[in-house]
Image (cartoon, rainbow, N blue to C red; front, side):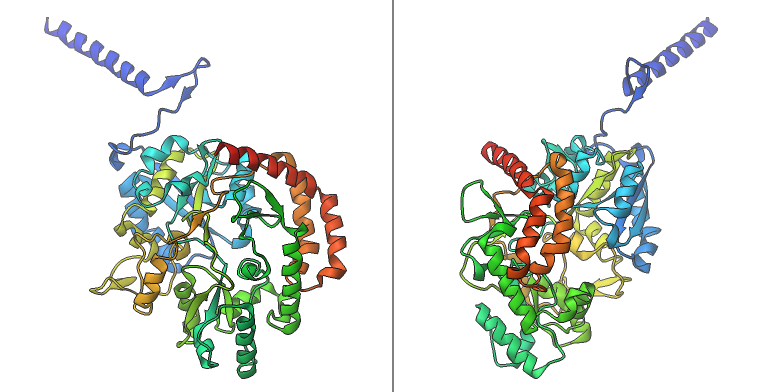
Length: 505
């Protein structure tokens, strides 16, 4: 009798095991076992998750300290939190939005990296990004408390989430302000800049006193000068298309065919001839950024954070340097695209896209994890004083500050005044969201035209835009090339998609 009971128990146990296995997998008609539903991360702990391997591609060289932490503390915390073996790969910035990134996607590698809205649309059209929609509400539930909803919508196509936004910072009027060397401004007896005339006077006075300095170490000033050459509140969608945010209609503007472009190009030519834009800009563009960081420039295009972001590098060369933002012209509302810094995509062939989303969630989950990924280990990489001000003990960069910046968690050092911090936190006050926020153009039907247009832009239009060659003698030929490349077909398709989206919104 005992033997019968034992055998009965064994049979029941086997039946229960088979039932449990079949309930955890869905078997299709061709007997292929399909993945189970997404894990409910609200209830699951890392010990309940099967091990996973994640590869995160970051752009840049990667500091020694970052590589060290990636194999120790960061590795350990990711293993503990989501049971994943994390590996960082570093690729040059020249490979962003193409190059090696495209190659890795097209060959089916399993990885995640940052993206932008244009690159997202192109890659989704090719089927290269994973659809992350099933995982957002569960795997990204913590970060959704600190990253706004419009930032998530910016990376949606056809109501599907193809990238997870990172960051929450004042983004309105990016590059529309003049970021001036306030120390130089005061040195030549000026206090502020409110017009183009005052900006050029600032250059003249500083150039007379410091001829070794350059004026504007850049080649694109269309945003920061837009209040001077047009009454429209222009906001660019890409190199070819702008919107007038002061108008409530859905009409796009062909930038290069506009009267505003002619005014802008003429102004940039004047700057180049006057020497405000250095002559070497035409042949050695990378040197411009280097010279600005070395404290050799008078002004640059500003953002909310640049008065303290830029000062971090410039003050190493010029300890007394001070930076301040100024807007030229009238007081128009600042336009915002959303508050994200960037976004992470997951490759279409990733084995565990949900686990990648769980990792992104860690980046913006709480103060402790934000500090680890951004600043390192307290006591080793940084210290905090009683006021919460940060002092870095190592100069090595971890995950780039600009990528991680979230106003709910970011820390400031003692060199940044309370006034700058206060200005930063209210920068977006009164800003309005762009009427195109959340719109993503599908270039599938005009991608050949777009490729040709980009070639024309680089060879013929960029030199006019930067003032290297004059508008009157060169524009007609450049526009002829642009028409031949298919700009009219491209504009028509863009207008059709935008109008349909705008009406539906």
